Length: 87
Image (cartoon, rainbow, N blue to C red):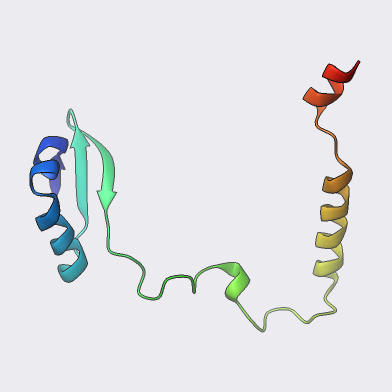
């Protein structure tokens, strides 16, 4: 359902309840164009983060060596903008 910014401000508490308890998705528009959405939170926050996944890779997987190399290279990296200011 769409609401203008003014309507959303006026009925914000009610809209939050509808989102939280009914699972509705509310679109907030400014001058007829959508600018924000109120959506219910994920069922279990944090479980969709790749760092939380277990069992995909073994500890000795080559992927980790590549990531370590990228991190080492980034630590030695000196941004061009800073290089141009030195000289």
